[in-house]
Image (cartoon, rainbow, N blue to C red; front, side, top):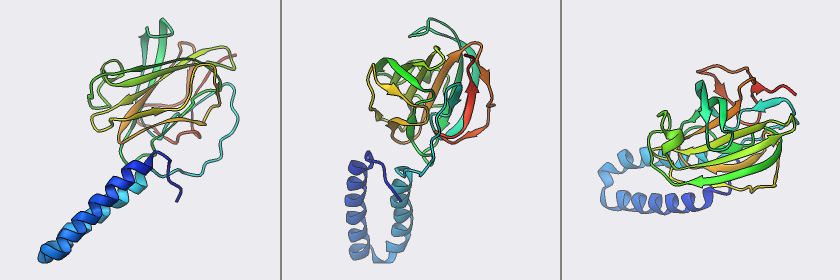
Length: 217
């Protein structure tokens, strides 16, 4: 199993903690060692599972809007997007549990025209106000169909580290990685109001693969 590069520090810390607890439990808490080690091994394994990098065939897309993350569609609504679009938009929000792959991918192909990091709160990621109140990074791409598409990485109650590896002027390729969020979070995508939405609330998405919307040329 291939691990994401963001796993290095977390796995080192988890390994040290695991080794210390395992040593103490087997040497000083012998009668309780199995009760301690079994859940500890499960948690240790989940750390590796969280940072897995799935092998996916990413296709080229023009009109299609691709799911930027693995997760569950929790919101589809018309909103006013005032940070970049300054217009009405359709917001599609996808919530990621700690068990989902947390790689963040471009939803559309085009050119990165905006990027801004916002410090903030750590409300639970499914809270509606997390889109504007939580720590977050907002990016915008001018798509190959000449539309402005805004998407936002949002830290949650557990997620406390947002990673983004792109800058203004970079090429965006739908389905390809641009960042990572550690441990439970959310991604919002803001699309032009006339976009055809092909997902629905409750859908499970596979980042880089599933089509969530289509834009008119």
